[in-house]
Length: 413
Image (cartoon, rainbow, N blue to C red; front, side, top):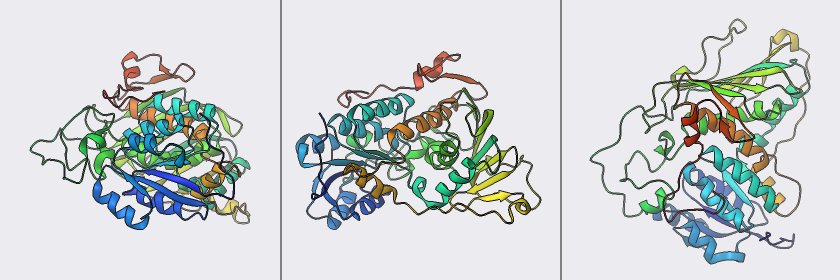
């Protein structure tokens, strides 16, 4: 069903799935738009739900997003998803199937197949979508895109990107853990994931480290740090991906990780583009030939062009190198943007989102291929994007799409 047309003399009535942690920030940022009315709040953790309701006492509250969306129907206009990664696609797709615009936290999904499906259904439903990579709209990142696309560093041949954060876990499964706190509806937290006992390492916050719930450092930080090079160079799908990390455990993501990609060339790159990601103790990279005295930040990206280099700290102004070559260079003037308000405006039909699912889907697919490759270290996975398949390592295809737990199936996934 088509989304209800929202006219500009009305409020956009929002429903928020996940209101603790990042969800609390998302709630505040979207509610700060003058045309937004927070209509509903949902969280599996009653304590976090109560804290959010204090800020929005008129909002209806729920523990299960499926019940919320089924109950409220047309009394909600748009949905914000700020949950752990494994529930992004189920919640976002449930909203899309109802014709609701969706703002979804990053990375867009937990699996490659989910990212493809969200993009296709969002296009079909013709609703405003946005992935929560808020720095995408910041002036520093948009200025970096403009600098690269101006050609001042020449065609880009390589990108190096890194984060020294460690959203990995190299240990084994947990034992002797307590029951879930009374405030946490553990079955609903697991959602589509297989049943297992609660562990303090999962909730709140630590879920990013575990393969069934999160996407590791690559998914958590790579989605931000990949974003600017991906947008600036107008990249598509990689030809192949290869990782260097410890053997897979099937439980936690690697604590340190190096991922290499080759992308087809674009107007802004050489004939092909080599991209290398480093995280944990592999970051920042130590094997790059850099101008004398240059120290790399703990997170960022380095563009190697045929004429010059650009270093982009996360988050900070781009540095053009060698510095003497750009002593009189005038940087493009780019206004600051509000990523959250951009989505609200687009829900009213005013302007378009810059990180809608048509952009966020392919970016997330590329990232998550690196997460899949972590399970096959040292092997080059050849990628057929059109058919959504790894062509040379058959076992990898089983990791592109997971089976949802009985009772938590979602139409379109």
